[in-house]
Image (cartoon, rainbow, N blue to C red):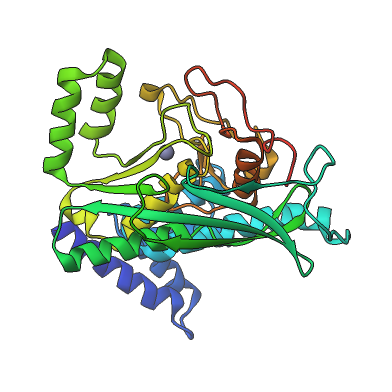
Length: 369
Ligand SMILES: [Zn+2]
């Protein structure tokens, strides 16, 4: 606590000296050293400021690559609780991405129904009682629109008011996949999501809110009756209180059962911002996407930087990307939507990296966007 107030003191003093309009150069330099000191004491806003000054080229790191170091600091600032840091990171990565790909497509006048990498028009018409996520691709008034439709069954043992907050956070997380995207060489597609909450037995995505007690219960049950692999996997997930999507590991299809477990301590489960973003990531699994992060214990080796140019702009460190399937707070990118389209077109899970016995990487990767 003491460190915090000292850090805050240096940060505020540093800001006044550095950003003051009529301040002299020596004053600004002194201010800078205070800001850096606050950053080293763990202050979130100071960490953000240092990252920004590095990116603006005002200061340089003597030890590390400037940009890489700045992105890492920006990420740290977010984890220290400075929300603007993530917003900046998302903006920065998207800007890098568009600088790289805009030139490639802007001159082309790409209209008409969506054409895949194979030169054929993309046809998606997945709907019915046994498809928990309906996906229909339509070409209407000169626009390609991917209509996704989900019926939610939300299971949460909590008071009414808490339940309503949880449900609205879930809906918001799913809606984070909506938007305008560019796929298959700069063709535009709009993603819209219709969410219903009717009582249906088969045709639903189940969202279960697992509080500490419930998670312990599930863990105990798996310890008693599970296979060795299940025990290992469960230990990994439940002990770490990680949320997960149960879509039958490696068995995703448009018809497979889709259950999303959101777990954590009560504080996390009542934080709508966190719940929304966790749902955003897990919904990606329901849409047929694999994980992008590295987790050796789970057999995920991660995706090396420079491996695929279309995700490179989102790289924070070597195997860590500011993308939804790497970090729930990350961006939903054009490439992610391309993978969703392929998942529903081909009825096949789309992977960033090999997972257990599945080896085929999504054809969306390595082809640009
Ligand atoms: Zn995941």
